[in-house]
Image (cartoon, rainbow, N blue to C red; front, top):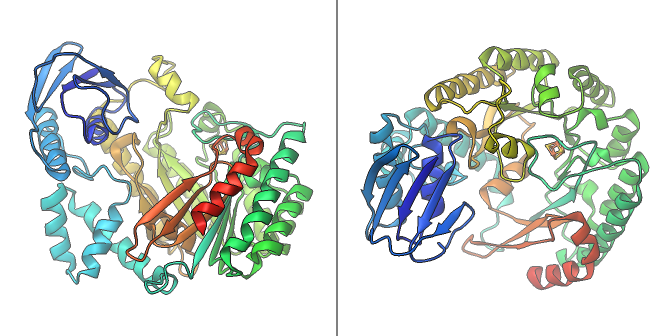
Length: 489
Ligand code: SF4
């Protein structure tokens, strides 16, 4: 347990994230004398009369750790100061240094656009954020690829002449233990699915006019697992999108088929018939013991079958997702997963670092001290080294298939404080993933949990979120539509 006492009310989310990165698996609590901080997505308790001024006072359950002066610092200075204090205390450095944001490639992209050379960017980002050379060079490689791919889709003159469409299907065959999405097990009673599709149909019909008949550049149906829908339900949804949004004309049309146990030839034919160009079949790991442990409820054979089925149905752009840092897995397990995927030869590979999020069953188990041999609290040094090695294994595997990294984002509370990286072969990139990640295009998001984004001429994004839970979304669909109209027009 780590307790941070402070009187400052700003940027405590960053302090929390940096501390968590140095002490993975530790429970961290921040207490503030003056009330609730501005950013409170982490546990905060109110504390009276600490008298600690502009200081952070770190304590563990065995006593005082250290104090840091943080009076009158800008956000970046504060993060640098806290990073240095944590690094001195632990004797360790982090690959991404003091960066807590989710889009480090943006920093590299901005510097490229300013005309800086690679060496200048490395020097500048090291100085500003203490990132490692390796991570800065990865950011530069990805930022250059992103610029090449998305420049034609970004209009500075008319911010709203291009957009992408996202549709959420919040159903899955069953719920995985690490899941933090609002996914509902689909079950045998389809009345809930039907009620959801009825509400979604209303949103599709009523909001289509907002786009003034401009076709979306890219379409992404995610969730959830959209292929958890029955073929006739998929047919209904994709037919509506085609009719109201002209989705078959999009440059790229992705449907997630994440759970291989939801994939059938009939469903794949429905996707093909409606112009879907890209699907994602996600093994996460090719080790059966781990799949069982994380509650995926499918086999490694299901993964291979779904992949081959998709090839037989002529899908020539298949992505596969894997997660590194899964409970109980070591470098050899990741090597096994990667070698199995290399044999399958997908067109793109997305490598996630496990993020144990608050809404997941796994987080609950970790906090309750689950000690079944697979969920023991990690040693930070070992975790960091092992995760870096696993990431290198995945990187080598992807590059051996002729793929290059083309987008990257970070999440909070990831094992080893690493990143998620998308790799793809030439011509098999997902433009949507770059557009959503870099926030360079409007996104119209439909369905439960969808977050629409609108960019102004200066490139600043504003957001509007639909109800997160499917039941709330269904019950309030009229409000959802009114809010969307107001936001988009
Ligand atoms: S497949 Fe994905 S969205 Fe569905 S339950 Fe598992 S982690 Fe959640």
